[in-house]
Amino acid sequence: MDAYCEFFIAAGRRLTGVPADHPCARVHGHTFRVRLTVSGTVDPVTGFVTDFAEVQRAFAPVHDALDHRFLNDVPGLENPTRERLALWIWDHLTEALPGLSAVEITETGASGVVYRG
Image 1 (cartoon, rainbow, N blue to C red):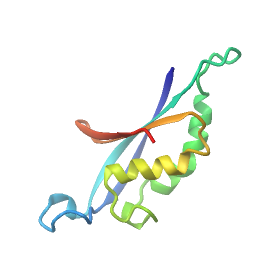
Image 2: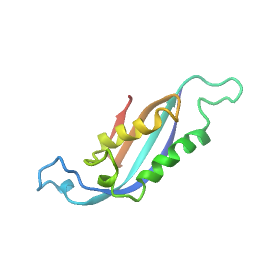
Image 3: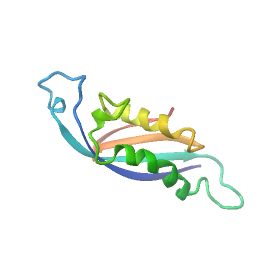
């Protein structure tokens, strides 16, 4: 079974891997929706796949590192595409969040990525 929590990160960025005339080459911002999916079996005692409080606790330092930041200044996110952001979050959560099976990043209501490790 899958359980998920959603979080929001407001951040600025400038994509460095696009042509200079591309709109995303300019500084701009998004309110990114981050959906973390944890997969596993339902614990017979708690009735949970995961305790959402544990997901929130694991994500707190990641949120602090990214929220209201200029993502290009975050080590490892020098070209902060949504794909690299998903990988970065995955890399910073896999040890702290057992069962993590997907990181989904939505930067607009109509586009995003899903990384499954």
